[in-house]
Length: 117
Image 1 (spheres, one colour):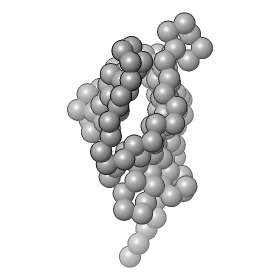
Image 2 (spheres, one colour):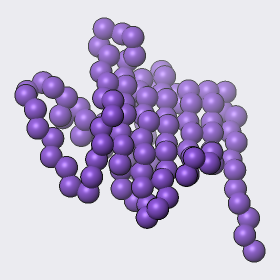
Image 3 (cartoon, one colour):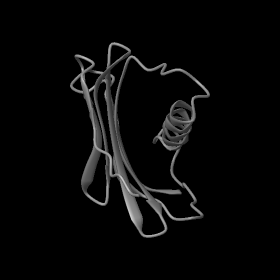
């Protein structure tokens, strides 16, 4: 599975807001830019998402909104995670535009499955 698209916003509408919109990734990537333009923040946020999804680290951010896309063979996975006050405000997973999982801030979740025999 390969990370293909990465969008991220942290502390939205606050003085310390930081966002990355429309980062398209390939199998090999090179980030180039002037100092203090977000290269390290970009890698750190990708790494944090990876660690959270792999269960390596608990969610540590106070605020953050991920909207990412992964590709696995011909399947496209879109994952959205909105964190507020170190809590999940919204989480969604879709595969090939078919919603498979959704969770809202009240903790109520919906999971869609397909049975094959």
